Length: 221
Image: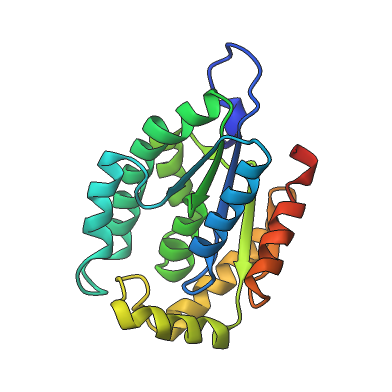
């Protein structure tokens, strides 16, 4: 069983924090949009914590190096799933929960849904196994809102060509058929949980995407 972010925090008063994640395949523009969204929320007086996965805490950043460096086949899907779950457990305990408990809004570049897509849709691990790891390591914490930045294969390829000029990590170097399975899995998850997910056209201009993200959060501001 999984729970919303505010269901697993200390019951010592009202919780006003929000847990928001950005998901999507390689080249979808998550890093750009999370910075822009953070700036827009801060301008409205919201305390914002920007973080990422894998990473976001000292222990998780150490595991990040193991996950993203080396050849594309350095780890098999099961090993990756275990490493991601370990990094996430430290990240949740040391960064995300404390921020939510004091009322901050946490914006996270990827979370457990990326494991469900990459090691699940891309690597063949069952969703039940990934969520069992998540239930043990992170007590089943789920975001209040998840944005899927859906980008066309052509636009993603264009952006990755620019990014790869500086060197690609293991995930960005996965083959095209793997990337296609990722996109399909993300779309499937979003369709299955419309209450939590919002699908955003990430082929649009950056400013338009940021405005759409902010508009989808307006009811909490």
